[in-house]
Amino acid sequence: MFLADDHGWQQLTEVTMKKAEELGCRVYLNTECGHSTFSVNQGIRRFKIYPELNVKIVVHYYAKRIREGRLKPSSAWNTDRKMRFTVQDPCNQVRKEYGDVYADDLRFVVKACVGKDNFIDMTPNKSNNYCCGGGGG
Image 1: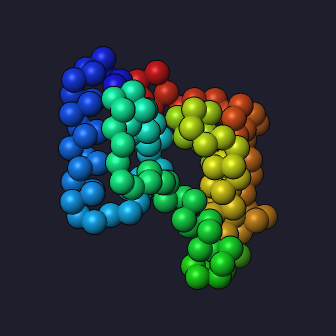
Image 2: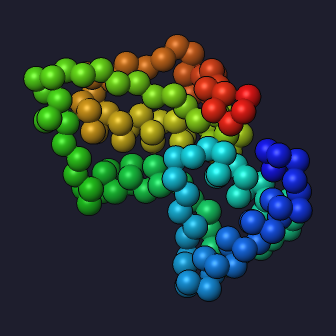
């Protein structure tokens, strides 16, 4: 996709989805990598691949499990340290795919891990955040 190799992109997407289905997966769980998520989702659409599974992002699962009380991260390690953290919103996931809902879940997870008072948001943020250029931008 990012190298203008449509044949390679299609082949990789098809093989990945097929293998996940052969393994009996119901969900293709992607990491925080915005480029991978965008490439898989766009490949499915562009090449009309109809997998028998859903493509999801792990951050949504983290947020859901924390809200349900099934995952219990602790920010106690940072109570005295008061280390500050922020989030670089992955543009391919936030701007091009899932919007500010994803950005909100990402912040929720980070705050649960480092402490709400130790999180400092960038300006601009979420859908308006600057791209890191990590994908060759």
